[in-house]
Image (cartoon, rainbow, N blue to C red; front, top):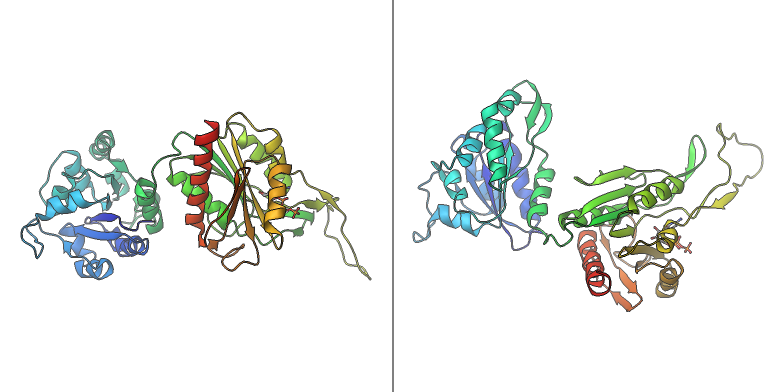
Length: 402
Ligand code: CTP
């Protein structure tokens, strides 16, 4: 998602500096060209060589460090060629310097000419963080348009417990993605996504479920958030972590999902039903564990409410409803039928047997079906697939609805 993007990583003197090797590596894995400036104190916690090997770029420390090409002015080049600057961990000292326009080392000097998003993650002892001068400097940075990544609470390296910890590396990368991966074309829109399987209990210890991993829905929620939407993710039980910075609603049964999705969809602009909702649920739920008896047994099932159909029938003005369809044969025929039966605007159809499609994998092969026709998308990562689906939804909303 960061192919062709230039990321400038600023690392300052804090024990958490060691986490930046992994952060740099994760950014490189996203396709970014990562450049690093370290303060002199940062080099006490992690070596410049480590970051040079990981990024394959020269690491700058001293304000007079040069490129081989002496005609390039490093602090101007580093600051102005960046698509995003991430300063993490950012010490109280560097927070104060940037907030007050002080540029007395390579990092603070390179930040001044920057025109791109600058993300600053203060990371320090809890009492230093709570200090009114530090807080005032942070407020000042926010006022001037710098983005502050809040430190997390926990046990700090100095021995204290409280706020001041550098967030996880993956979270830092997620903030960079939020800043620059996509244009904020969904700003001001509420997107509701459902994901994962449902669990239909028939006694206190057993339930019926399916193989859904939730990956497709979680990717859709992530990309929608990166595009600036206000996202609610209604999820059945899955083993992957909740998407950061969305409203997460965890549910179990199809009935719970119906209640959560219909409530959240009241004021939604876009609703995407990616969940594998059970079509049937046990007619009776036993109060106690059902004991085995001689001979065979069976469970009586009753139909669940069809959430997508309900949403289609109660569509709000201007609302866009997208469903998913997983088939093992007659993909187009069966999925097109769902489009009209459930009165939705789009069905994303995928064939379980197609290589690269299905529940557990990180890729998908989708055919987008609308009343205007169908479009088969090539095999893509579920993140790219999500972006492609959202692009098509927005195109249709722009063309036909807003
Ligand atoms: N869906 C729903 N509520 C249900 C069941 C499914 O909202 N009770 C949604 C799914 O989230 C998905 C779409 O409907 O977006 C799938 O359609 P569906 O006809 O339920 O698919 P299948 O269960 O695969 O259909 P069938 O049993 O007819 O093959």
